[in-house]
Each structure stands twice: as C-alpha cells, then as structure tokens.
Length: 592
Image 1 (cartoon, rainbow, N blue to C red):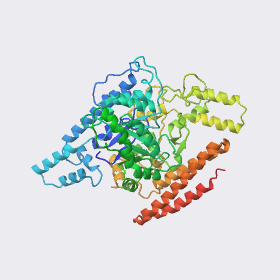
Image 2 (tube, rainbow, N blue to C red; image 1 turned 90 degrees about the vertical axis):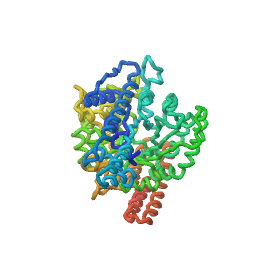
Image 3 (cartoon, one colour; image 1 turned 90 degrees about the horizontal axis):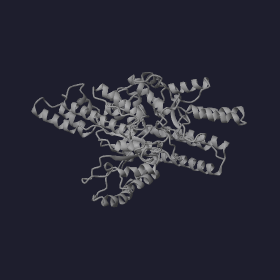
Image 4 (spheres, rainbow, N blue to C red; image 1 turned 120 degrees about the vertical axis):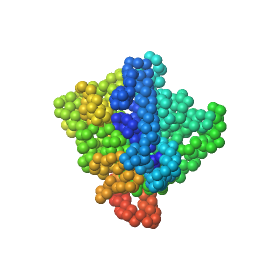
C-alpha cells in the first residue's frame, strides 16, 4: 500500500463511506457491514449525488441483506475506480488531486521522492515521460470491511438455511460476492461457524498464480488467540494475511480487555515468535492448498500492524521500527477530520472542545461488553430524558443486538424499552434496599441503542434523517481523542502521522504505553470493587494473575525505556518516574 497507516472501522456510520473520501489518495480504510439499512441508504444517497440510477433492494426480497451489501460494495469499487481514473488525467498543478496524492505520501517513500524530483525537472518531453511513470504507479487505498464475528443474530429467510441467513454469515456473503479485491477484518472473537463459512467462497483461496482476491485480516488482542484462530483457518486452506493487534482499552468502540497483558509485551511476543508462527501456519496451510492443485513452495506474506491510542509521529515511528511492524492504524483522531469521516456539526464541535474526563469506559453497550463512551453525546441526554419521563429504553427498530431471553422466548435487546420495563418491574418486586435498587436501576438504564445512535450522525450530516427518526448521536472515541483539540484537514492529520507537523504541540499527553497501563490499573480497581460484592476463589485467582501480568508489564517497560534512553531518547527518562508511580498504585490494590 502507498501509506503505512490505515483508518480502522469507526462505529457503524462514521466510516461507512470513508473510501469515497480517501481511497483515491492511496489511503486504506475499513467500513462496517453490520447495518444493511444504513448501507442501502448510503448507496441511494451517493447514487443521487453522482447522478446515477438507483434500483432499491427491498427488505422483503430474498437474501436482501447480502444483496444490499454486495450492491453497495460494488458501487464503492466503481466510484473509487472512476475517481482514480480522473485523478490520473489531471495536470501536475498546485492544488490538484494528483499532486495531493503524492504530497500526502510518507517522507522517504520512493514514489514521493520521484514526485519531488519530477517537479524540479524543466518543462519538456522528459518531464512528461516522468509524469506518466508516476501516473502508472498511482494505486487506490483498499476498501476493506469489518464484521464483528459474535454479532450474528439468526434470521428467517425462505431461500436460505438458518445458518446462512444469520447476520454475520449474510454480511460475509455480501462481501464475498462483491467485485472488491480487498480484505475482511474479523473482530470481537472467534465464531467457528463464520470462519468455516469462509471456505465456501473461492475468492478467499489463491488462484493458479497464487493471487488471493479477498484476504482475511484478524483483529486480535494477544499472540495466543491470534495463533489459535489462524490455525483453525489454515487447516481449511485459509491464510491470514494480517494480524491487527489492538490495544483493548486504548481503542475506540467496544473495549476487550486482555487478562492484564499490556500492548508492549504483546508486540514483543509477536516480534519474537513471528517467524515461527509463519512456519507453523504454512505447514498446516500448504497441504490443503496442494489438494486444490496449487503448488506453493514459498509461504504467503503475513503482515502485522497495531492500532489503538497512537498519538504522535514519534510513537508511530517507534512502534514500527522497534517491533518490525508493517503498518499502524489511526482511528479516533480522524473523527475530527470532516474530509474523512461522518460526524455531524453539533457533535464535531463538542468533540473538538472536549476534555480528558469527557471520555470514559461505560457499560452502555447492549452486548454486555465495556464500551468507550463520550459524556456529552446527545444520546446520553436522550437516555436521561427518557428516564426523567419514566420511559427508559429505546424502541428497538433494527434488532441487530437482540441477545437476551431473560423474560421472553424471542431474544430482545437490553437497551430496548421492552426489556428495561420488565427488568425494572422485577427489581421493584424484590426486597432491595434503596441504595441497591438504585445501583441496579442505573445499570439497567445505562444501556443505549447503538443500532440507531451510531448511524444518526451520518444521517444528520447528509440531511437524510427520516421523519420520527431519532436524532440522538452515539459516538465511541478512544480516550486518545481527548488530546486533539480542533477540526483538521486531511493533509493536516496525515502530516501529523508522518511528522511533517505536530497537532499536539505544547499538549501534555501521556505516552501510549503509560496511558494504556493507567487504563488497565483503573480497570483492575473496578474489578476489585466487584469482587468485594461477589467473592469467589475463581475470580480471586483471575485477578491475582491479572495483577501479576500488569507488574510484569511494568518491568518490561522499565527495561525498554532504559534501552531507549541509552540510544539517546533522553526525554523518555521521565517515563521511569511514571512507571514507578504506576507500580506503587498497583501495589496498593490488594486482592485479599
């Protein structure tokens, strides 16, 4: 890829059409394919903007979910292809998209060096030939898709088996049948049924030349789970093209905390065991591929990238250099870049003036997984308003997150008005103290409707909100966004990533490793508080292991920062004091 960073998936709507905004500049991005209603409306909106015919795919049509996803992905592929073709025809003039393409590239790339050399050439035939060589090298950024593996509600479709009609499998089918040559990012844990379904589509296997049209990327939080998942796939002849290591608590969206394993030690393990893992996986993969009459003597490439909490060019360079990474992911900061993502004006202005304590780890998600939240979102105001009117909960129109059968035969969503009414009624029937009732009431009513809330900002930005549709915006930035104050142009954010300018100059911001460590100690403290209410030997052992991993992580960082300081990065010496403070704070948290 032309760039060494990508834009990860951002909620449902925030990056739903990011490829239309950045792919022509060679920047890869990821969109969610969870919500086919949002996807269909985006296809309609952008078709109208481009004066293209739009034939709707009705919900009542057979296999409508997969068909809508395929149609939208094909639309994106065609639209980006046209953009790149138009870009290649442009003159190399100041302010043109073709110049912007090369100017956004990282310093030191051969393509950018060639562009700068060409611009210094005198006018003439030789310069024109040079320009044509550069035009031929232009490559669009990847249009990748994300599927949360565990968000897999079962559906009924007369034309499909019950498995094939489930949300995750239908989404995968929509991608697999599209004309895209890109990657599917599988996140949020392993779904054996979904992983096995990949083998139903030829595009995930190499052709006779060894080329794979659709690649598999796993978003992982540690080496062990990465290897287990990749082995499962390799035995089916499916190769993992990239592992995206994500900092569990320092990324936006749902927070998947590890068992106390910190990002630095996790990356160190990937670095140390990368070649061994590559060999193990190829040994499982090659015999299966051979059965398909494909002889492959050289293992396919396998990239490793990291995302979550990266904030400066210095951190970006260090991570790539020290751990031998192929790329990094920058997500939340792009919420402040209107050229790249969909944030409505009101939410954008609030984000741009937010403070560190406006971001917090919540229990707002109906999935029962902790969720990075923003205090000043309009959906939080809506939630409190509904509680004040004694009507907590949401209408639940989309039903993507229906997974609770506590009171009903059919699963319902814990953010729904139906569930919260039944749960509060149950609480009132129990002999709870005032304090305990309020605690449980708050836990029930903290849930918010993500299906609508994570789309609302997109509808507001494009002014396509339907009558009676909720205007309440849910947004889930990582805590790193607190240190970015402003609204930025695309070239400013890309320039910040590559160190051409510093958007955080004079901003006091903790190092990525220190910030994550602090988040994990906060998390550990919260788990201890829960332990005091529900003491079990199993939970005690888990927390003892968790604390040990944190202590070992601090020891790792102590040694690492000493090595870096010896290499001349003197300012990192101050991090030792922060590590000492963190260790002292951890020592104060006693399990017994």
